[in-house]
Amino acid sequence: MATYYQEASHTFSEYLLVPGLTEEQNIPQNVSLKTPLVKFRKGEEPSISLNIPMVSAVMQSVSGDRLAIALAKEGGISFIFGSQPIADQAAMVARVKNYKAGYVPSDSNVTPDTTIAEMLELLDKTGHSTMAVTEDGTANGKLLGMITSRDYRIGHVSLDAKVKEFMTPREKLIVGRSTDNLSTCNDLIWEHKLNTLPLVDENDHLAYLVFRKDYESHKAHPNELLDHEKRFMVGAGINTRDYEERVPALLNAGVDILVIDSSDGYTCWQAKTIHWIREHYGDSVKIGAGNVVDPDGFNYLADAGADFIKIGIGGGSICITRETKGIGRGQATAVQEVAKARDAYFEKTGTYIPICSDGGIVYDYHIILALAMGADFVMLGRYFSRFEEAPGEKLMINGSYVKEYWGEGSNRARNWGRYDLGQGRKLSFEEGVDSYVPYAGFLHDNVLMTTSKIKSTMCNCGALDIPELQRKARLTLVSATSIVEGGAHDVMVKHKDTSFNK
Ligand SMILES: NC(=O)C1=CN([C@@H]2O[C@H](COP(=O)(O)OP(=O)(O)OC[C@H]3O[C@@H](n4cnc5c(N)ncnc54)[C@H](O)[C@@H]3O)[C@@H](O)[C@H]2O)C=CC1
Ligand SMILES: O=c1[nH]c(=O)c2[nH+]cn([C@@H]3O[C@H](COP(=O)(O)O)[C@@H](O)[C@H]3O)c2[nH]1
Ligand SMILES: [K+]
Image 1 (cartoon, rainbow, N blue to C red):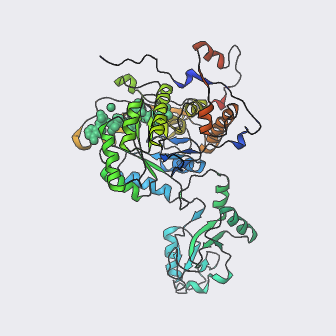
Image 2 (image 1 turned 180 degrees about the horizontal axis):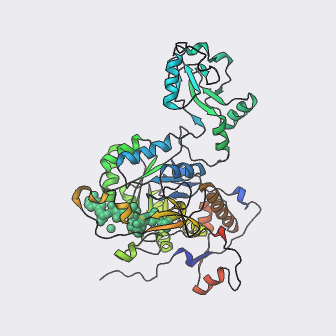
Image 3 (image 1 turned 135 degrees about the vertical axis):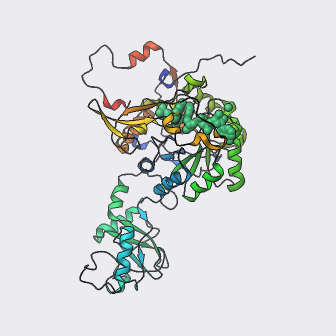
């Protein structure tokens, strides 16, 4: 006989948090939203943590390189969509990794004997007029000087002249140490009125350049998610078919973490994919898996070796999976059940596997509910698709700006050809829709608003960080009429509330 669950499965909107005791220290400035991205042993630190508990969905209309950079600046991570040719996806990853985040490896380097003609050719290629002069002409050679467009006057210098005749020599340069933090660099930049500060190591070899204008952008983003080379972190989605080609290409492009992107993660295909990665790369390559909605699915992927596990079938705003295939579970219940399994797994094995609630976040407060129920972070599609940096087209419809947002299971997304891979399968039915969402401006402003709401609610619950919230949270189911009570009611609203974030 089939198994029947006795409880109905619930959605986020059916819950509210009951405040806990708020004390002196419970102010938003003291709240940390840092959260683990990959599994770790009890008492140890995860090798990757997020600075805010938000990641962007593995979707064509959400996670391109532009959004990935904007989100990494805020402390989250994007998973670049996998529904595109391998080379295109790897190129997107590489664009994020090569983006400047304060410290820049110098990409325009010459030697003292380089001619002005050769230097101009390089300028043409890179577009960068500030060049390092090193002994061997490489980005990490011994620093001998700097040359910028202010040092020579085109038309007035011989093209055969050498760089050494015009450069500012090393002894006249102000330099920083490669170990200096950005604020020390910025002090030097201001003190000496510099545009560029070279950083050298103990042997006077060039390490990085720090530019005045980059520092200003960096200062506005204290939560930036950076790798050990100070590059933005980025993830990428893979599938369970072409991973033998896709994974090496993504790693080569510098990807920090992978996730297997599927509606249903409780499959032998996912276990095989993870095993292949462990066999070829050991634990050095981090990979999330999913989606699951119950303890069985969680335990299967945990045993297979997943670094994090994603929860959610059919709850996404563009999803029609529940309608077309009859599979899924209310997202709140799914998170609660999987969180229980994760805690039991931790208890049993000493390994903590972060879980991600994917899909169905409609209001900002749904994020805090997901976290309170045990999720370590959330994945959002619709939320990010509304922003300037999202890949969808921005259009004017009936006097309002909208962005395009389409599901990965829609014909539009599937047309790139994945569904013809291997077995020559053809698409038989759609599992997602193509839609518009109201345009919402820039990612930075929206994420700032969302995270400040999360922090504020955490103060109501007396929690200074996410684990404390998870320990202390008290959640209540709400009746249908109390949901009406929770909105503006029995008044004529003058202006539509834009902070509502829907
Ligand atoms: N979270 C959600 O509720 C949903 C998400 N989506 C999104 O749509 C996209 C497509 O999802 P899916 O259709 O689940 O893609 P999928 O590629 O995981 O699965 C498609 C079909 O191929 C089969 N399959 C997978 N690997 C195989 C292999 N190596 N050999 C033979 N058969 C194999 C699967 O069992 C399934 O029947 C993803 O981006 C996913 O995130 C779609 C529907 C619902
Ligand atoms: O049934 C589906 N058909 C689709 O075409 C589809 N595309 C994406 N997804 C899933 O929805 C998540 C994003 O959900 P939100 O827009 O609610 O944030 C995503 O992160 C996915 O898990 C889909 N589900
Ligand atoms: K399954």
